[in-house]
Image (tube, rainbow, N blue to C red; front, side, top):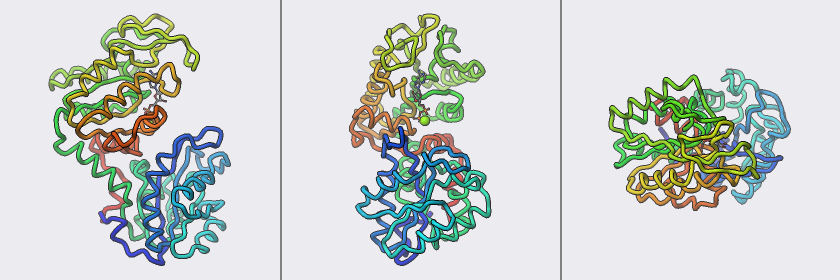
Amino acid sequence: MRSVDDLEVAGRRVLVRSDLNVPLEDGRITDDGRIRASAPTVSSLAERGARVVVCSHLGRPEGTVRPELSLRHVGERLSELLGRPVAVADDVVGESARRTVGGLGDGDVALLENLRFEPGETAGDDSFADSLASLADIYVGDAFGAAHRAHSSVTGVPARLPHAAGRLVLAELEVLRRLTTDPDRPYVVVLGGSKVSDKLGVIAALLARVDRLLIGGGMCFTFLAASGHDVGDSLLEGDQLETVRGFVDDARQRGVVLELPVDVVVATQVSADASTRVVDADAIPPGSKGLDIGPRTVARFSELLADACTVFWNGPMGVFELAPFAEGTRGVATAVAAVAGTSVVGGGDSAAAVRALGLDEASFTHISTGGGASLEYLEGRTLPGIAALED
Ligand code: ADP
Ligand code: MG
């Protein structure tokens, strides 16, 4: 795989597929982590005299123009981070995009509108890929967070243009390779988030590799239910009970420590002013929802993390967006940050949690910008967006 740093780019039009898919609240960017992670590739191209055309998706407009999902504000933030103007086009491959790209001088940066305003993007449509490719001479793939999608801008364009991997993609791959090739042991994985069904593949793959698997978040209730506990009104995926029992058996046979919460924070409402209670994990009252792991679980998980040499953490331990349910995530994140070896955070919400809870990003080895992509990589699947960058 060629690196962006090995390309001759002066005076050339370079299309950079970035992942600028940031969380928004009322049009405001609530976490700019992905924009910051994408800036180095763009800035190095501009410094070397390329005519840089950045493109990305934002949210799920599903092939129609949704003004609230415009990349305009993202372009403003990118411009601040780069310290240079970013010309934002009004469309993706239309009149405005062609005019904006045509107007670029060497070292200038443009941003196309949200790729998913075009139905051809997620459909992997050939004519859309042709139009996008016609805007540039060279393609740089830097959207690690979208690398597990065979979308036009991810796989179609590199099939049509000379291509290379961006700095972010290369950095992500280097860290994930460390987790899959001979990781230093003990290797501990912490999984949380909302749904176990999103993470079945990765759990199955990880059981063959890790020494300890710690389960929190919404998915722990399917595990607790599978071992016969009543989980009240907590998130429960009844159709996954058998699968989860299979995981528990597999862990036992392999000698993997599979740790579930021993206590949980419950409430009857998912709200910022909910009144909460800490109960034992096998005594969740009917009508209550488990919305965070409890303090004894945080202590236990922290103990199991303390001597780890490699840690991967994906998925918040509770509904961290609301203060009454944030302490479990804070506690586990703090324990992961304290690990002396390699510590990797994967997952959009987990990365956002690290920043929202005010933890020092520098105390982690790496905070991945890709949730689904990093999980699929750890599962051992080929990421189409990475394969497309290979020669
Ligand atoms: P990531 O993006 O890091 O991969 P997920 O998308 O899998 O994480 O899950 C994040 C979501 O899981 C958060 O919005 C959080 O509120 C939710 N969550 C965590 N614990 C629970 C719980 N006990 N009940 C309901 N939702 C939960
Ligand atoms: Mg998520």
